[in-house]
Length: 583
Image 1 (cartoon, rainbow, N blue to C red):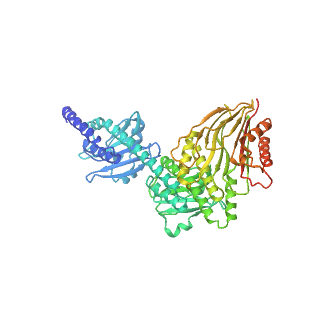
Image 2: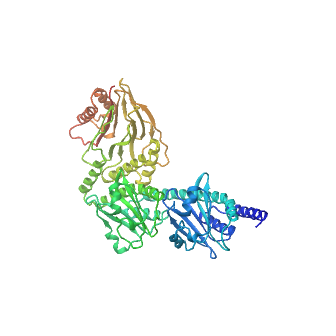
Image 3: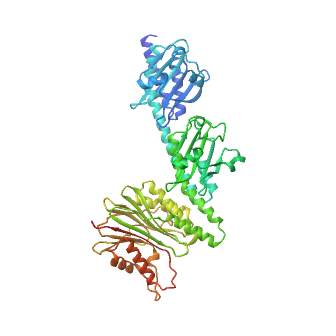
């Protein structure tokens, strides 16, 4: 072929490439166009595109073969053979005698159904990074030439750009779909208290984003520590009730023990795999956690080797985060429905409330911090907590749920789980309030609500940042005896959706005393009808402000109980006292 003829042909191919590559952003469709153009450009019998995936150990491969132009997919380990050499050196190569070249993988030829006689292999480089490798296989009328290499080299940049753009488009589109799917799943989960419905929603929604042949949600038995499948997809119906995993055995148990996701590219190479299906080739198991406690596992199995990667694990973990709150809420609901007698119900609710309260006061350098919850005997909705966020940053929460008994305990459980989940997402305090408010609005019955205060104490810089959600204003008694009331925030939670909250940051000086409390402290009445009220609470704090935080809390409790008559029926008395020590 003369130089002029080759130049003209190359120009035509470049124009055709520009036209066809701009005709679609669909990744699979574009790859087929690339393969067809490569085969046409150098009269090849087949072509391959290898794309490197930074999130997966293998290369994703698309192979096209004439005359049927069928497309096959495969996965191959990178770094070996001709492809490995081309990727490492970023240089094209012609292999004239592929049958006798030791770099040609015989087994891979069987996978794609093509015997390699002669090969052209070129690196795909886009924006300075390796995208993959493109290969033309077996010239129809002999061997590939330098002219063929020049033609493909001319097309190579357009191919690389097109493949990179299509992959980016697919990634952005997939992420948008996944975010929407997570949002829709979250809405469904927040409105359900049925455990079966919650788990079915999780697996059905996951199926739209992560392909699997077998799926199961295992929950941990708090008594035995064993795992039992509560909901499954794809298994033999007769075996569903028997899918149990003993503690310390299998992949699912390992996830519960370590609290980390496990990806198994080849189950035959992992002795922990339980042979639930003879067709399963790979598996992924992800923990369902609530407040750093593993309560279950989402387990998916595929008939394909190496079906799952880090991206899949991250997505499933996002579903698991939603599932944790909903599963806990649903399990609590089912437990409460099972209680028939009022006293039994109250006992369950008391345990729920007690389990959510801190066992010990936090140890914060430069501060004394203590909490009190004195139960009235009935089950209320009071709650306080200390949450370790990062070094020298401690979350302080206090809340009061409307109502009493089982309904209040359920709402408190939902509030606490939602609060902890949003704190772990590293949102700002006002955003935490907005998100918890939206979830409660969707999940609690009309007429129920939560008041509360949440703040973060930066003990290094001595700054408290807080938001008040329609709660009794915390009292900050300055070292000089002046008083500040912490009112900034917004309305109560769970009543009105779409509410914006504000937050405030203030400095805690040496000797300052901060008291957070519920209405059970101030709304106590004497025999003559007088209320203990805010002013008496401030006077009590001021009188005892030089004492340790625990003594201040004790003094408040004593003042309140002595103010009321002996026959008085108290509400829960809940408070948190924070005192900065003198230098």
